[in-house]
Image (tube, rainbow, N blue to C red; front, top):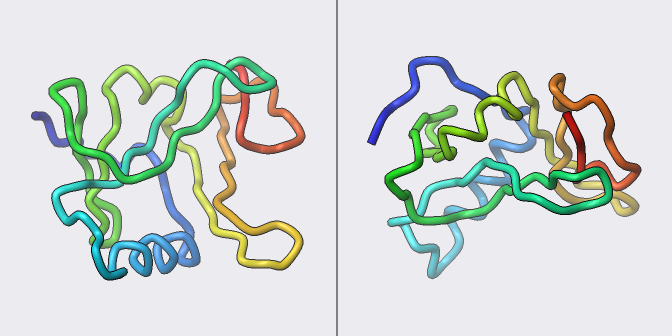
Length: 114
């Protein structure tokens, strides 16, 4: 397993607080790390992946303000420099992604193309 020296993505303070809150819940599987990645699909071709998962051999690890993270090595190309935020409002609740690599983003904000 490789560890990245540079953090490929940034999290806002709100996102870090929400992630740490999720990690502190009863029954959280502490063997899992926060997976940041992409998968095929969505309105624009690629969708963001953000969730807790087990590390695989294709993953590199990094830590952001005490949050252990994993990312498939091949996903860095799409995600480097991205900022992840947490919106806690009544109308828009959830994680949002601001990706400088996306040439086109759909209205839902969870799908993009490069």
